[in-house]
Image (cartoon, rainbow over all chains, first blue to last red):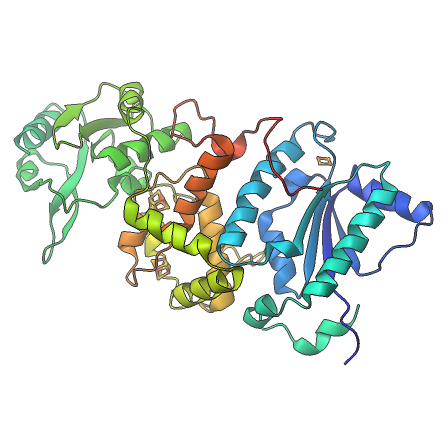
Amino acid sequence: MAEFEPKIVAFVCNWCTYAGADLTGTSRIKYASNVRIIRFPCTGRIDYMLLLKAFDEGADGIIVSGCHPNDCHYTSGNFHARRRWIMFRSLCDFTGIDTDRIKFSWVSAAEGAKWADIVNATVASIRELGPYTDYKKIAKYPEKEVTHG
Amino acid sequence: MVDLIKRTKELLETSEVKVVIGYEQGSGNKTRALFVEKPEDADKLIFDSRCVQNLAAYVTKKEIKEKGKMAITATLPVMRSIIQLASEFQVNDSNLLVLGITPESKMIEFKNLVEVEAFVHQFQIEIDDRNKEMLDRLEKMTKAERWKFWIDELTPCFKCYACRAACPMCYCSRCTVDVNQPQWIPVSSDELGNLEWHIMRAIHLTGRCIDCDACYNACPLAIPINLLTKKMLVDAKEHFGGYQPSLKGDHLMSTYKPDDKENFIQ
Ligand code: SF4
Ligand code: SF4
Ligand code: FES
């Protein structure tokens, strides 16, 4: 069997983290290619159900990222998001969902290097944890698709 | 409940309200909801310790609202629900009169919802010892044990939605669980469909659930889904100082503080 390549889905806001990830690229910083970025207008728009959908579809890890507090393009989207994350993360943990597989971060448009670090660190830690078999099992996710990166 | 019966008769005779919602003897040893529209039916009203159904679930129903002004027999959890519903603009003084029943089983008629709120705020929402113990037990488990616990508990759920029907706060005309474009919750009553349904249910009730246990009592399989909402209640206290339903409408999940604390965002 080929070495396990974690599948990571990143939910990011358009104004900070997406721009930050863009900067990572234009700065020619090399980082792990395991991440599929999904762009949202704002962290306030990232419905928690989407995170579960990512696991349904076979993600092994998730990154959720947006503007630093006080920097949200819509003023307060990330403050609302933060409250939701606090509660949602705890609920997931309470049901036994592996919250070590969900990373939250603030990455600004100027933090291209930080984005690379977050992705690399996430990939490394998910590699260590292995495929998210518990969720894949209940989602009846085909095992054979797990290994492509 | 002589007071309640007498007052119900008066309210209907004077047409001050069109319907009084209360409890009557049901089949077996069960009680059930009663909708009194004629003064002579008021004699069927009862109240005792078996009356745990949360009657506030009816005040948002179109069929009941259409009748005109309602009065409701309201124990403490029902009063809490009503304040929550009022803060969500579902009921107001012009369509609802509250006939409160104190924890000592005395009837008090409230002039308005502001008075109901003041009464409700005398008491904190407290999780009982048995459930506290359960929560403790779960928190002490490893993640893998918790996962197994919930998969085992939730898998028998067959999505009858009795829990949703019993909850006063589940009044949306189209619940996310029924939405199929996109299909948020897998339709099947299998491990995945049930886990995601119950996570969704709990999160939509976070900051709104007043811990009446009506959902749990309604579940034909006695699945402890109320532990999920109780956990959210405990967390709300820990992270945000707790909440009480309030007419101010400063809902836990639709407000924030710039200095809300967490320890997991990098
Ligand atoms: S979720 Fe359950 S305990 Fe909470 S308000 Fe609804 S019925 Fe009551
Ligand atoms: S009442 Fe029980 S069986 Fe019915 S949907 Fe709710 S948890 Fe599932
Ligand atoms: S726009 Fe980036 S968090 Fe709101």
